[in-house]
Image (cartoon, rainbow, N blue to C red; front, side):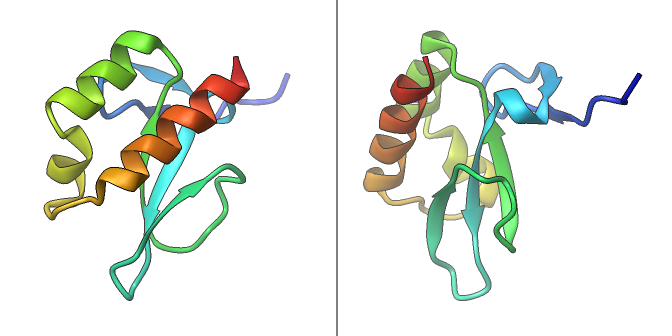
Length: 87
């Protein structure tokens, strides 16, 4: 049996399988991307696809706290769209 690679959702703080989460990446240049592959280089934060997590993520600006800087609103929107597609 293969071991799961667990990551923590920044919104609900639960450990989940990496493949069930969406990754947001900040690269060395300070640019943000939604990373559906989970393989882009840079600092990453993971979010699960539960509607409550997405609501909390946007309302409390959780990504700003995770990256310790201002994350553009378009990243929150792209993340929401990405999570809707995965359902």
